[in-house]
Amino acid sequence: MNPQKVIISENLAQSLTTAVAEIEYDRLFVLCDETTRQLCLPLLQLDERLGIKDYESNLITIGAGDTNKTLESLSHVWIELQQGGATRHSLMINLGGGMVTDLGGFAASTFKRGIHFINIPTTLLAMVDASVGGKTGINFGGLKNEIGAFRNADSVILDTAFLRTMDMENLLSGFAEMLKHGLISDEKMWAQLLNTDIQELKVQDIADSVAVKQRIVLEDPTEKGIRKALNLGHTIGHAFESFAMKRQPVLHGYAVAWGIIVELYLSVAKTGFPVDRLRQTVQFIREHYGSLSFTCKDYPELLELMRHDKKNTGATINFTLLGNIGDIRINQTATEEEICEALDFYREG
Image (cartoon, rainbow, N blue to C red; front, side):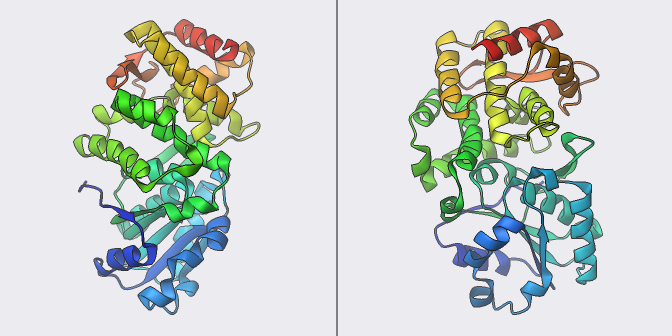
């Protein structure tokens, strides 16, 4: 894949005009969900800036929330593109959170074997994680991101104006990925994040977080090695998310934050991560994210969900752990007993 083009925008309409002008396309489509159609679409100023008079006839809307990141929604997008006369030279703008950019990117990557697409993430989670890095996909069979492909957007436009449309719960969901980036980066960034006013995030905060992901993805675009660093908290986190999906769904970032607790405990036990850094990080997460409720009777289900993680080789459950802040240890394994001990720590902490 080519390097991801990320535009840090302070003028959304102008940035979009520039990004679209770099693409030769015949038809333009806009994908959004029910929420972003109402709250975010007006900010694009498509008619005024791009002179697109008929884009509303090529406006594709899907249901909001991760429960709509499905094969059915994907099929709906394909049908709308087909009926709208999309060709291999068409362009789709994905306007929304991680669900929209993941699903829209996958739809664009597969329709006619690939059309142009631009991601405009509207949530903090999508800005610092989902929309950047070339991962696209949908949930399938009750599992997160089970079907997908690697494909970079032509451009990703990041504009903090959208953060004003978000509630605190969704800001926290995105901030969990920023915290992960701090943990895999360096002590200074990690410490700054623990003392950040989440409601007063600046463009530079987001740019610094995205830069961590970009640096890693550029080195390893298809996750053969160091890109696995970005999976810190995700082996357990995805299991928590899938577990909750069958009961009371939780936001992705919350599941990742809870997964970080468990995987840092494993890091202390297996790779020597400092106990004081564990305590500081866990305290921050507990204060801001609460906890997921489960019992030891749920451990077999959680372990089975972990076995479905895409990072695994065979039946071995694979983790990204840390030896210290910024000291990344990929391809780590743990026994069921060690994982259950870490889950005990999570429940008793």
